[in-house]
Amino acid sequence: MTKIHIPTPLRQYAGKQLTVEVQAGTVAEALSGLVSKHPDLRRHLYTEDGRLRSFVNVYLNDEDVRYLQKEATAIKDSDTISIVPSIAGGRGN
Amino acid sequence: MLKIERKDYEALRQHGGETYPHECCGVLLGEMNGENRRVTSIARCSNTRTDSPRNRYHIDPRELVRIQREGRERGEDIVGFYHSHPDHPARWSATDLAEAHWFGCSYVITSVEKGKAAITNSFELAGSDEGDKKLLDETIEVTQTET
Image (cartoon, rainbow over all chains, first blue to last red; front, top):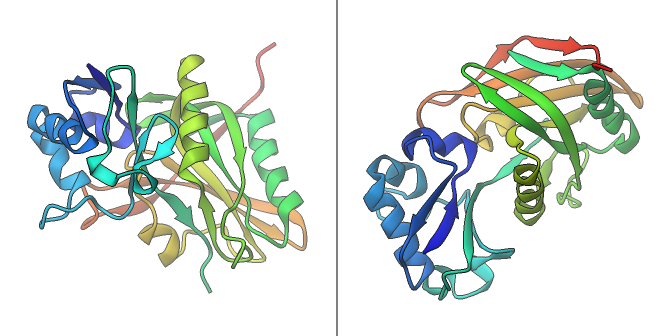
């Protein structure tokens, strides 16, 4: 089973769990398994047309999956996935 | 409400003074307790917005993954973030709100005037999704470090 770490702001939609375990062979399958178990997470992770929101970073162990094979990245049971919303801002002008 | 020990409160303010005239940034770790957050440690981060550090900040998610993992080992959660506004009020900007996604967490902002930390304010990211999110003023309770 692959462990998915749920960030603080999304735990309320994942049964208040810090981690969720799923059986999956790829990142896409893992995330699909996650939202199947916890449907309320879907709108926070995905846009209406089914794409991962731009501010949602998905890490496989210590690697951003964007720099691997994205959601097609293969995973092993010993791998962990971290969902990390972006942190940014600033005074602006 | 955000509860934070004086040593951590002063440390995040000092960080802004050190990086002036650039924005500093970092993570607040601790525990969530209903509508309150208690900070038990802070972690400085690098501002990856080297293209515009005087008015923008961004934390590398890879750094966040590491901080989160180390916090987990100590039994700490991410409860918020801090950054500074060089020569600008300690109020959230449109950019701050647009880029805020950690609902239920605290966003602490320190105004740094001519290299010295001035005012520090904290805001809770409230709302249910990107469509109705808002940053609400919250009280900062600075506590003395227990010995």
